[in-house]
Image (cartoon, rainbow, N blue to C red; front, top):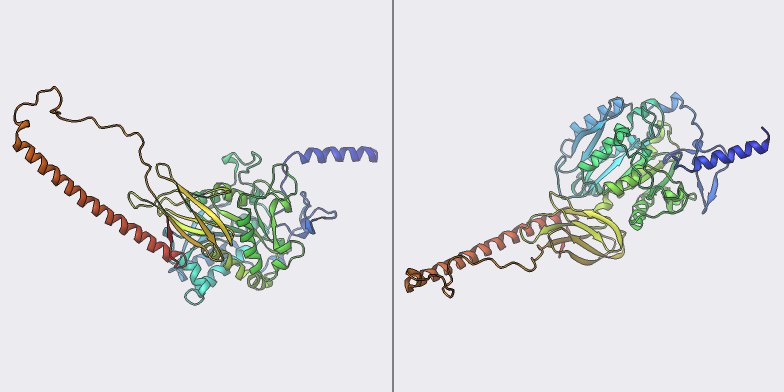
Amino acid sequence: MDSTGRISVSVFVFALLSFFPFNAVARGGDRISFLSGPMNRSKGFLTRHLFGAKEPPLREEITQGYMSNFEMEKSIKEFGKRCANISYVYSIGESVQGFPLWVIEISDKPGKKEPEPSFKYIGNVHGDEPVGRELLMRLANWLCDSYMKDPLANLIVEKVHLHLLPSMNPDGFALRRRGNANNVDLNRDFPDQFFPINDVESMRQPETIAIMNWLKKEHFTASASLHGGALVANYPWDGSQDKRNKYYACPDDAAFQFMATVYSRSHYNMSLSKEFPGGIINGAFWYPIYGGMQDWNYIHGGCFEITLEISDIKWPKAKELDVLWEHNRMSMLTLIASLVKAGVHGRVFSGETGFPLPASVIVEGINYTVRASSIYGDYHRILAPRGSYKVIASMPGYQTKSTQIQIGDEGVNLDFILNPEESINKEAKPKKGCDCNCNCNCEGIGNTKLLQFFKRIHMELYIFAFLILLFLCFLFKRKSILKFSRHNRQYIGGKRSTVV
């Protein structure tokens, strides 16, 4: 075949392949995983090709010094015993090869439901990106050791429910490869908003199913996954309808930029990046991926998730882990604390009973709904600071309420009390008994003055008893709402809540 023929075939193959939404090399692929050609320069930073060359095998000396899966399991269980007062260890499922997906929950009331925001960190999504699992164990131990000593540690433990999943892909780690034991990239295994991939639940990997079930059980406010191969905070959307490399903003683009910037600016040098201005990047603008965990969290889990590339090298030598921990420590802590210090938080109550309501909370102009929890009626809405927002709470069967708030550098506490909808065109109840103005028989004792006297006394007693009961109900509702509001002030910075 001559050169013209080879070029024609290549063009045809590329055109055919480009019809499908291909998986990018990584959210977490390092420099050696790029296509072996020149990288494209766009908008002043490097972009990766969508097709990656096979990565060379890891040398044994590079992997030394990292915890094995069994060492990590032992470390998690020992942590649970050592820090039992602020931690709860549990598993959300198992990997393909049956290794438990261990989670550490850190809180002043671990394992219990509270009207507080919840945050999760997930490490080791890709088996050959182990830095995240090591840093999450360091984070857990630092919080345990610093609680009651460091104000930031104290804030996180007492005001947030923090969940740490050090390894989502223990099988891939053991095999020293990107995918799981079935060689599937777990960050391409979630249902996608643009393309009907991964829609068949039975075809998903057990690690993916475990994450999805986890979000159904827990009411997470925000989260982040830790990757390697670059140094940048990546935010939704991760892909676009036409599969092009372009900025594709989600409804909460400003809030996600805020979250990414919180991490980048607190990092040792991420915000100084020349490749990524400010150390942050929109996923679709960088390179589109489909079936990613980040977008699925936001769409289906009600959880604001960003993807953090925390190390230029995917598998650095173990002796560099202490330095990487120091570079990322303040960023990891500040991102968690931003849940408490930013946005709008509150609870929704029934004006009739005083009980919490699982209402919907939206912000005018942003096409996204946050739902209050069914247990406490608490909601936590991440919003970019220094802005004016109209917050609206609604619930079927109740009157919708809204109010305008101004968010500065601190978060706002806002409770809603929703009153039942007033019935329209109430049907008059049919009269019981005999009306003496009608043509029926009203003779006998019904017309006597004595009976009328007793009827009047009974009516007055009924009215008096009803007024007493109404007053007692008012006192009970007032006490309940004040109690809930007082508790609400305790969990968000001790600030007084606005009630509408």
